[in-house]
Every structure is written in structure tokens, then in C-alpha cells.
Length: 406
Image 1 (tube, rainbow, N blue to C red):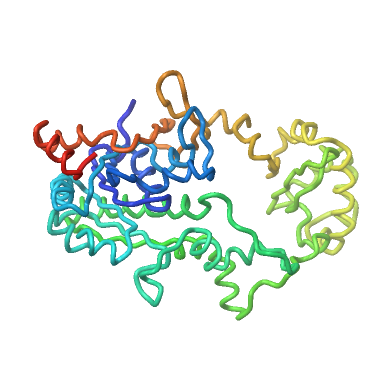
Image 2 (spheres, rainbow, N blue to C red):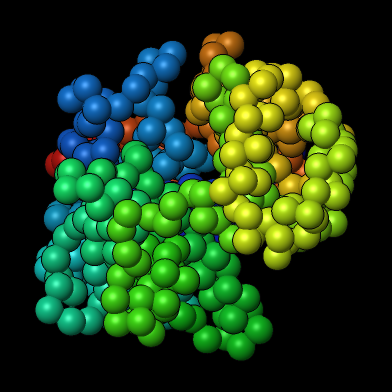
């Protein structure tokens, strides 16, 4: 396997659940060695959600834990014990990046705040992930993506029908995966800064900030208008461009048209739809005419798309140069020809002929397809990592005896 772009970088992660660990997973897939510190007794609490029935297992492994901890090494250290914190300090001396999502009180209690970590290694890039950011009245509060990313950013209301019903929850780890990818990008920038200037950064990232980034166009417009978007959403039949809408097929599926330059494609689309003469219908001849006659145009397209099923339309539109997409159900995505051609759903080898599907990080370097690696077992690499720091087997045995390591 070719070394990744971050090969040679060592990351130490003291974090739980998904947001910050997902950042570590991205860095690991990009070639960094990511050492995940877990409590010897409990490990990352995210491991326990599978026993509560909240996570799916496949070939005996927790699918969601695998995604957020791919390619890492797990070391069981009790940071509350002086011996455990001392071992963390020895590990930090060898590291480039420190990741944590501990809240202020937790960082102080375990002596892993910026000053503590920089005392171990002044050159470390220190990365803190939080729910709501480092300043303000909620800086010390905990939170998950359903609250900080989805609800507080305004995103939930933007996806709410405004019909008086309950607002919907986000999909699993919806904000965590975006926030983690954002944080990994920031770490890469900080490593470049350190390499070129010698200055190590302190990075702060939050779920609230990531959520606001995601819906920034709506937030900026709402800030200017001093009002949120009105509900219900605009009438579909008043669309400014009928070629920017979904259309229902005969078997109750959807084809999504996405043509921002519709006049270029309108004649070819009409021909493909079996009605070339409609390209010159005065009601629909150009974008202005289609806007004035949106209802008539959309109703005609509704009728045409309703005449064939989803698979037929996918075949018919395959060579069409205009922008469109099939609206896929999640279980169909892995079998999609384009997804398979690009290996956008890959297999992480679990050993023993077993594998778990995983979505690689959405960036490819030098044309090389990413190959996600499995997540570690709890404390799987404790001995190998500590032996690499120069400890002896006798020292490891004594540390295990006192409960400082797993």
C-alpha cells in the first residue's frame, strides 16, 4: 500500500463518541498514525452503544464504531493515575497532534489542557472540539450533533415542514461526520503552517460552527432579511426553472433535473422525451417563457415522466448531457455503477475472511483509491505502543497490576 500524504505524522487522541474521533479517523486514512487513548476499564463509551441496541453489528463488530475509529491504534491508559498521565506525556513527546473533546473541567482534572500538553511537547498542534465553541455562556456545556449542529444552527427548522408537527431529528452522526472532516482539514493546514514557520497552532472547532457553515447561505439571507424563510415552501408549480425539480416516475420513484443553464439543453431534452416539437412551443421556448408558464411546463413534464418507470428513465437519460440524477434509496447506493467504479463504498478487512463496508474519506490523492482499515479492539495496541516508547515487559506487568494500563 502506498504511504498516505500524512505518513510519518503521529496523532494522540483523547476523545470519545464521534465528532473528534471522526477527525482522527480521517487523519488515519490519510496516513497518520493515530493513537487512541481509552480508559482501561470502560474504553470509549461509544463502544457501549452496541450493547444498548443503538448500533448495528456486522460480523461481530460495531459498524458505527468502525467508521469513526478506522485505522487507529488503541492504548488503554488510566489518565487519572499518575502513572497513566506520565505515560501519556512520554507518548506526547513523540507526537505531532493532540486531539480532544474533553470539556474544560475534564481537561484540567486530567492535566491535558493546552499548557499541560505543551509542557510535554511545545511543538504539538493542539486540537479541541466542542459542542458550542470556546467562548460565551455555553462554552463549558456538553452536547451532541442533534442539538449543537442540527437544532441550534437553525438547520432543523430549515428542514421542517412548518406544518405544526414535531421537528425531525437528524440522521445518525449527521453533524459529527461533517465536523470531523472539517477538523481534519484544519489539522492539515496547521501541520503545513508548523512545517513552514515552526509555529504550532491551537485549533478550536465546534459542532455549532460546522452546522452554521453548512447552512450559511440561508443564515446570511435570514440575517439580511431579519426573518427566517417562510413556510410552507414555495409552490412547486411556481418554480423559476422547471428544469430544476424532481419528477415522479411510473413506479413512484424520482428523477431529479438540475439544469442551471436550461436553454442549452431544452431542445435535446424534448427530443429525448419523445416530443421534439415542444422545444419550439412558444410557451416553453426559453427560460423566460418557461418561468411565465411554469405550471403548464411542469404539468407537461410530470405527465411525461409518469409514463415510464425509474429504470427506463435511467437508461433513457444515460447519454443526455444535461445535469440530472436518479434519487436513490440508501440500500441502492452501494450497487450504483458510478459508486462502484470509484470505490466510494469500500470494504475494511476484519481478518478471517470477514469485511465491513465503509465509506472512504471523500478525497483521493494521486489517483490512489482509499482502503479503509478496521477500528482497533479496546486496548489492542497498548503493549506495542508502550514498548515502542522504551518500556520493558517488567514495567508493563507492574503497570497492569496497578490498573494504570490495559
